Image 1 (cartoon, helix red, strand yellow):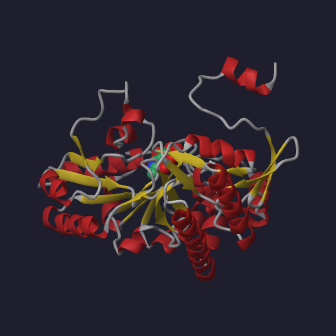
Image 2: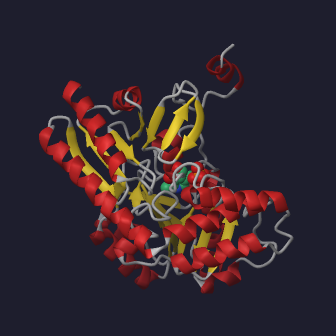
Length: 391
Ligand SMILES: Cc1ncc(COP(=O)(O)O)c(C=O)c1O
């Protein structure tokens, strides 16, 4: 049996996998076993921000591997503390809890909100339709995508979902009993849909009036993806809690719940924990990623490359208005909304050696490595134009 047949025999068929076998990564490319170099505008879903095989990440990981792979959160660990220092400095928060994944960090936020809310008599959670916060039950309860929730009820009680950017419904949904509002600055799975400035302004006003917590899920938008270390910087807000993951570990699994000092008292010893969260090897990689991405010049470059890519995409949109409806997103998290279904485009791109993703039926989601260069942007646009010409 070949690997495809073995996979379909042994695994739950939860994933639709790309029909190629990867040999190794090389910067902005993945190389297949039969020698194709595929331009990676997918980055394992916004993970490999520094590309594949970054020498600094490899060096940090190799050094840590030779010391120890795991201790436990019962031990003081300098690699964890180094990551915490870098991350708190870059994000301007005071406290961190390290997890294994995005969804686990969201669960941590839901738990922290609950414990805080108990002391304030606030127990309802508000989140957005179209939101994706992860696959575990707490995260799924606040997620608003029917496709992922179907068949998993009953969910956590006391969760209200409202339309993205609907200011009036937001006003009606929150009150003195609201414990927290959860949102992604740009809905990723939901079709690369940014939260509007008007909505955020009203959110902050209501937050100040009723005293609930604002929780930003920056699992996809964080760590430089949008041209700022955190996407909320574009919106001029600092939520009470921010969650990051994905790109944080440079390809290794680690997530983080970041919070203000005032919330520290609600997670006393024993109230929350994890065996693997904050794994030292992932933390060693994470420190390299955070230090790199938070460099002023690096983040400036991301912004410049992003404008270049966006300009080129907007030119294509003008040339092919019957195919491309809209370009959305910020920085290097861009969505190309089509008038037609996007799945065939993913296949056509792959035929021409480019990985992209399609979400929400019609949206091509572009998540290139943050280290992408002019050459890769040109290559991507050339391929896209070839596809548009013949589709
Ligand atoms: C915005 C957002 N939140 C949460 C998650 C879940 O993260 P993880 O898959 O690491 O559990 C994702 C993953 O795609 C995401 O994009």
